[in-house]
Image 1 (cartoon, rainbow, N blue to C red):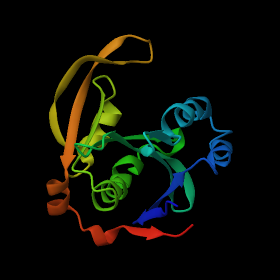
Image 2: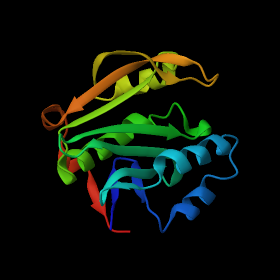
Image 3: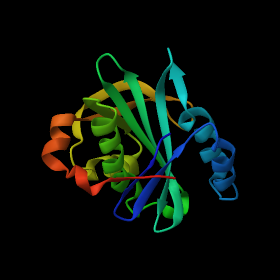
Length: 183
């Protein structure tokens, strides 16, 4: 069973098959609930391939308040590559939820799962996500993927690409700052 990840004022709780409906209920009743419920259903629920878990979704709590979600996905176990993502409740944006949650995901990815590389990105029009990614120590800009994402209008748009390696994480982060909590 997955444990919660805690560091600073943020705790990430795993989203599993047994609590999926409860998590959906927690994210109901907010102005941005429809978008977040869509994200839970399509991106944050556990997924498996050949018996191995490929998606690890977490809901984020900051100072006891529901704040958003963080995602760790596996691109390929053979090459130890994964990716991260985040969605923050509208009223919690601007409080550093996504960048402050990344150390949790980095610890889980590199220390617990043994991955070597994590990528992330955002549409070039999403300046808030770009700022959030660039606030996260370790993510390095790797380039632009042309017309690789769909924006809110359903149009193809370029994406900024970033990544962090396990060696970067080991230089920049103190892994003892993240603790695993039984839930």
